[in-house]
Length: 68
Image (cartoon, rainbow, N blue to C red):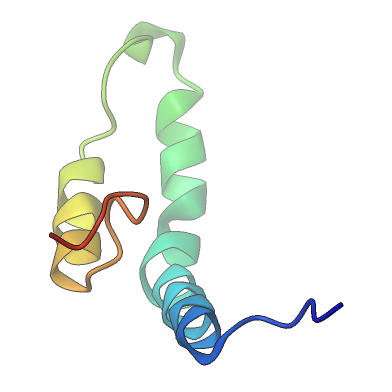
């Protein structure tokens, strides 16, 4: 059996890893610090909207949806 990813999946994994390294990992500690405050329970982290917009622009948002 062939368990290797297709070229399309390999390219997607590379794009996701690059996005994570550039945008997600640098703000991870800020997010954790913000969420650690009990006064902010059930509030959305302010940086989330920006990350969502960047992910959409990069074509990396809602990957489970069909292209059409």
